[in-house]
Length: 81
Image (tube, rainbow, N blue to C red; front, side, top):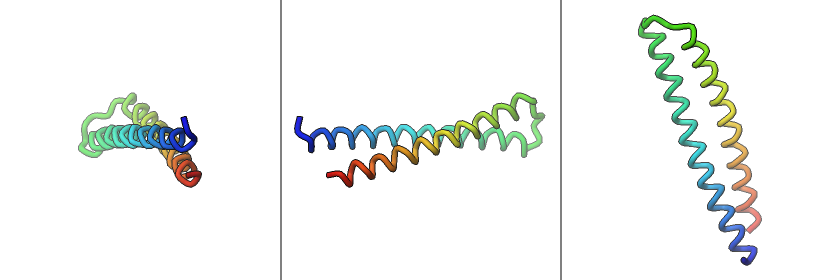
């Protein structure tokens, strides 16, 4: 493979990774909203719901960091062409 073809393939793979991470971020945000809606609507809150919310918030932080790194990597790839 030529260098340009390799970079194009890596760029495509990085874009796919970014799409997957964006979907995961959206899914976790929706889960957090559901838990918080139950809390705000006066539903009886189980202690494990608070733990679940905290785990979702932690996962969201992790995913946002991964997404940021993937975007920076894509920018570097595109700049190298």
